[in-house]
Amino acid sequence: MVLFVEFLGHILAVSAISFGPDWRGPRPGDVYKEFVIHNVGDRAWRVTNPRASHPGAKKYLPNPVWQLEIDDLSDAIRAEVILDRWGGHLYTINPRIRFNGHDWIPVDPPIKADGAKLSSDYYFQDNPLIVVPLEYLKVGTNLVEGTCDHLKEDGWGQWGLYALMLRVYYDPAKKPAGKGRIVAPRSGQTITENPLIVVETEHEQVDRVDIFAYYYGYDENGDGRFLDWHGGWFKPFRDAAPQWQGHVGTLTDPPFRVVWETRWVPDQPPGQIALVARIRSKNQLWSVTEVVNGLTVGRVSERVSLYPAVDFPPEFGVRAGERRLCIIKLPADYQPQSVVEASLHYRTWHGWDQHHAPYRLNEYQRAHEGKNHHYHYHIHEIPASALRPGENSFEIFSQTEHHMLEVLWPGPALIIRWKR
Image (spheres, rainbow, N blue to C red):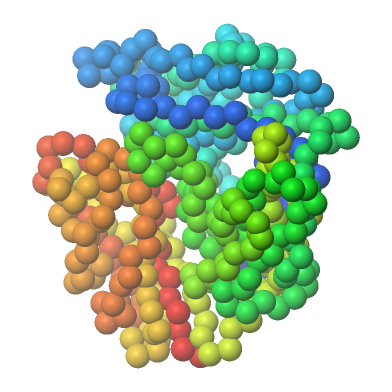
């Protein structure tokens, strides 16, 4: 009962943040534009401690200066940026960015379950969202810079800024944006597994619809929040443009409807799920629908449960003969014959199989299937017979002298579909 009360308290706390006046990001009724930088090559994305003394660090200094083009600030009311950020080297501290030589703006780390900021001894990749004062921006070319420190003054602090999206919000009464609404499902409904989501638009110039869902599930964008609006904005490959993944779907042609694959959405308290859509017109203005809330996924013959790593430890990376392990706990009465299917949520940086031995989940071994010097998120199918009641050991090992395998915050998590 204590665990349930703690979990419920977490739900209530995060719900207040997500739906209340402090909800940052696009909100119902907003009108905005997006202006994007995505950095390519080996140097342009690196942000290094200017006082670093290591020869390897010095070749990346001075830090790059990025250029962001903004074509409209008339009737603007606020602005924010979202980053595709690699957390970088351990013990990197005080990451920050600035626009056009104005004051530096801190870029906060992800959070832990208790709301505390993640310490600098964790590997992570995330989508931090930062408010930018409008007076820091101008129409035309804007210069964007990053910097950081290290726990050791001349240490090799470094983080990665792969992509940056600036959202400029406008007075909705003064900007003509195509609008719409989610017409199916409707608030308060119990929806089937893999439901059809239908968005109705009021303007023939609409050329894109992004749909997002709010629920308790794996933290695929690395911010430390499991109960959240789900979806991550990441570059699938180093030189590719960033894109949304893990959300309900992106649609570019009418009719705007998509089947939401809820296979790995865990069972929720009744009415906890919500949906919202962002609608873009050909003039590049976005609008946001009203939220459809109070939804429940009705499963009859199966149930779905999520089991994150327990007390996921810091410094969870390996090279040169190192090993690391963490524990994922399953119910004490676990039985493989009760499982319909099981999988592992897994986020890595440089989880490249040519450099690293397979991971072990108890006695089961599996290739990482990650990328060379880049981020990767995958859901690996796991044989039910490989799992055991209680503690399950997840272990990584590598002999490479090259870059470490980094397992990213908040660590691996098992997801299981059970027979009822």
